Amino acid sequence: MVYIQFHLRKGVSTTGDLAENLLEELNCKTAFTIPVFGGLPISESVVVTWLIMAILTILSICLVRNLKVTDVGRKQLVLEMGIGFLYQFFDGILGKRGRRYVPYLITVALYVGVANLIGLFGFKPPTKDLNVTVALSLMSILLIEYSGFHEKGLKKWLKSFAEPIPIIAPINILEIFIRPLSLCMRLFGNVLGSFVVMELIKQVCALIVPIPFSFYFDIFDGLIQAYVFVFLTALFIKEALED
Image (tube, rainbow, N blue to C red; front, side):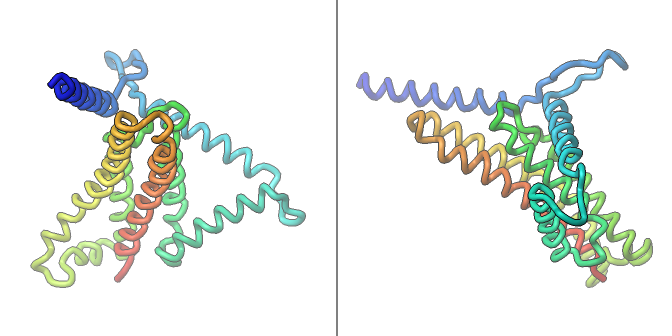
């Protein structure tokens, strides 16, 4: 009887700890406040985003210095292979008409990838903040609709909402709101779900056992989510560009 009560109490404590940790992860902490307009709070996710921007900017400056046309070094070869692979990947989806949007997609892929991996270095990933994933999704849907408007013109763009038959126009209009919600919740939900699974594994298993799972959820799954986000954005842009 004592054994059963001990395990019941342990289970309640474990559940309570998990709920407390989850609420802490969902809580958008304020890093500091700028004394303007009565105090402008700057959240932790914004500060980490600034850090990611600084890292990517410094890396970009370092990697593109002293580029050569002949007698190319190993660093430049690796850089060209990586950028060439990304351009070929998005070109295969978007085609020639969508090449102008490839730099945006590469930038978002790099940001989301680094944001998902930065938790390995003790920082809270910005993608765990719903505000960040909402902002990314809104930027993507604005670009998607702009690509269709730019390619077709105002008349054809408006007419595309009534295709293939006018009766489904409300559904096509509703997709404008559904797509960013889908992109947002898919990215946020997977990142948060990985955190919940890892917390359960840490509480149930020994200290060393969660290490391979951490590699999967923190590295592999984080990169997969970056890939899925930009892949779906590219598909939606391709659909908007089609006649």
